[in-house]
Amino acid sequence: MNVNHDDCASMADLAPAAALGALDPDEAAFLRAHLATCVRPHLELREAMALAATIGAACPDEDRPSPALRTRLLDAARADAAREVRL
Image (cartoon, rainbow, N blue to C red):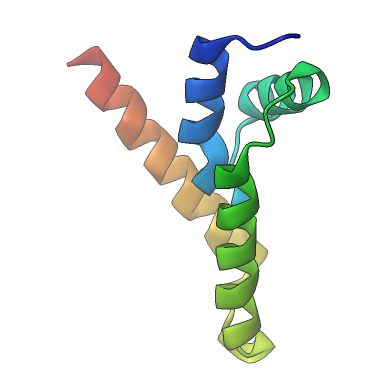
């Protein structure tokens, strides 16, 4: 039985960003590797995915931001998070 509680906690923290497709490549690789070996069902990821799908279905396509805007917002959020870590 493979359960690393620290990795499970990290996975839970990443669930909202994963559901929104906002993980960086290292985070996405961690998530995939963890899910491939962990015996826990990680309901927090399922719930975040369901919520993201519901919110996405509520928005008409014409109201969705462009991929370029999404990229700029994610880059700005990551840069801001990196600044906070250094403080």
